Amino acid sequence: MATGSEHGLKKLVWKRIKETIITDCRKSEVWKILILDPFTTKLLSSCCKMSDLMSEKITIVEDLYKSREPVLEMKAIYFMSPTSKCVDAFIADFKPKPKYKAAYVYFTDYCPDELFNKMKLYCAKYIRVCKEINMSFMPQEAQVFTCDNPGAFKSIYSPNSPDKKATMDTLADQLVTLCATLDEYPGVRYKKDSNMENAKILAELVDAKLAKHYEMDDSGKKKGKTQAQLLIVERGFDPVSPILHELTYQAMAYDLIDVQNDTYKYKSKDGSEKQAQLNEDDMLWVKLRHKHIAEVSEQIPKMVKEISASKKQPDGKITISNLAQMMKKMPSFRKQLTEKTVHLQLAEDCMQHFSNNVERLCKAEQDLAVGSDVEGVKVKDPMRTLLPVLLHPYSTYDKIRAVLLYIFSLNGTTDENLSKLIQHVKIEDDREFILNWKELGVPIITSPSFFSRKPTRRDRSQEQTYNLSRWTPVIKDVMEDAVENKLDTREWPHQSECPAAWNGSGAVSARQKHKPSAQDERRSGSRLIIFVIGGISYSEMRCAYEVTQAVKSCEVIIGSSHILTPTSLLNDIKALSKGPMETFTIDERSNA
Image (cartoon, rainbow, N blue to C red; front, side):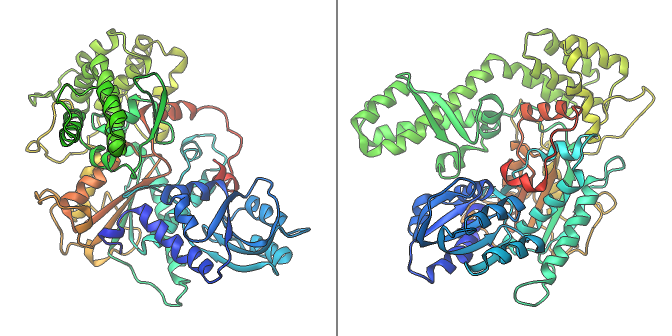
């Protein structure tokens, strides 16, 4: 299992690519060309830079689908998904005339026999290597992965979906490649739900595919279960967390500011357009992303002051324009300051939204979500909490979010009450924003006599929280219960036998306060992998790091088909009742 220094999914993926693709290439001294499909392009750019490839004697990176000039003296490495579209594009490179001296072919996943035979038929004499390297997931962060498939939400939850079965099958394949990359053979469990079957179906698929994968191990020996557990749960399990306004830095930024493809665009003080990548290459981002915005706003100016002090700058108020002046004078520490400037700007943007309207919204949202106010007094009439929000000129999306939190707090409302709320928010033509949650198994309309019990939550009254951040995502309870071996087997049935580490021996309390130490010093122990069907929120991603940090001996990894923001989730929910979209087949997965 990965220990500290190579800890992190991105590092692990790059290490795996180096051990397979790059090692094979090193055997010959010739400079090579690397040909990628859209999925593998994204995969590689998530875990390495062009300079890393150059140092491995890869001189050009090309797109498999674009027309390319022949380079007959060079060998080509093809890293691609095992789809007919990719295989056809590959064959076209060698038939009728070859474009390259030879081909080294690497598939992200198991290649079906008919595609393999087709390649052999036309290109056998050019293929030097053909391997499957089991890597069809996207390493998003150190402890977060996705299947790079936002379309899976509609495929799984739309009542008109033509390709639900195929989508579930692909997700299962991708989960198996994640386990293979981590070198884990986990026990599989799922959250039982009387209304929804998806978690159970996916658990069965993954378990069967894992058994098959480890039966046909390259080394010829059958692998036993490792000290890992995989939990599968559906999005409807916690509808509150992805809808609330979160006040931790990363979640807040992605909710309130239009960050596309992890790129933050902003205007500098001289009016020029700038952009910055919010990823793990920026160590300041890694340090700050899970902190509350109050701490971030306090820390960044302090850091800037430290730099200016070290450069004998007259200590004045830290503003963006002062920084610009300093940067012009001292190019030597420009990079250091650029990072700080980006976050000073981003935190300022977040705080601007916060003071404009989010602050007032948060109080009502927290009371509805938690069911009690700051003093711990139970909210007896949630409608009194909701009304001020509806009467204030907030955006329609913000009002929809508050209405949903009201409905979730009651576990559903009456038809009559819902109609009044929809009129209030003026979304008569867009009532699907609310009604379609039923497709996720979340109760929206209930009869007054219907009474459903809300799941009991962990007692967190002793934990220090900000007044406007009292809610804890339900998945954090699950992570802590799993680590402490407290998950109820009636609610979380085992799909397959459970490894010894998870059957009651050696449980660790996730609540003990440990001294925080660098991630790199983490003792290698067991892994808990959580997969949420239908998207994960940034606050749920944060929980994986928090629990890992608290426990030390167990690493929590969380993933889903995609990462969602409140706005993207609402749009996806609304779109569920639209007619069938053009069918989204497995072959097109890599282009999505």
